[in-house]
Amino acid sequence: MPDLFSALRSEIDRDRRPEADLVMERGQRRLLFEIKLSKAPQPSRGFYELIDDLRPESATVVAPVDGPYEQRRGVWAMGLTVKEVKDMLKSYEAVYEKGHLTWLDEQPNIDSARVIVTVLVENSDRPKRRSAPSSLSGQVEILGDIVSPLVDEKDWECLK
Image (cartoon, helix red, strand yellow):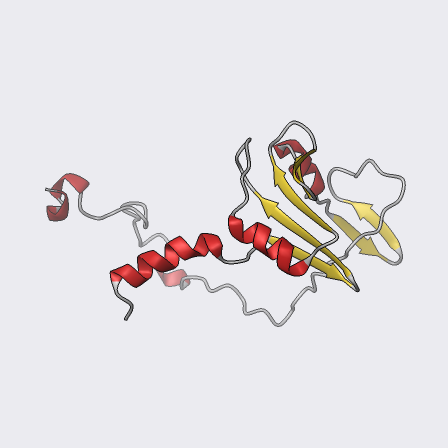
């Protein structure tokens, strides 16, 4: 078991290890991304070390900043608002039957798009839901919420 000093040193050294939140590679192209919640984002020393080690095509810090700007030579900070992130992650539900797509709710405002389809297969082998015997019907009284404690909190010894 590591001693406290080793654990603290490990936590301190964590900032020095080469790391990035996202590394994307395709063929010879390599892109690095660091995500920060601060309006004045400061990537760790490890992020810059990883840039030196990997020599990516681009390194980007994504944060809630007003506009793109160069933080350091070759490292750009660019902003995304919460609305932009939600719009990027927006999903729509539809049913595909006999070659036709029918939207169930809101329809995307697009002319064409490349899509990923997740097929949800109906499972007829699913076990049937159990029910209480009819002889118990009307014989049981629910005294409270099943997630509520039986004993009032003021009577808990650990809170005294």
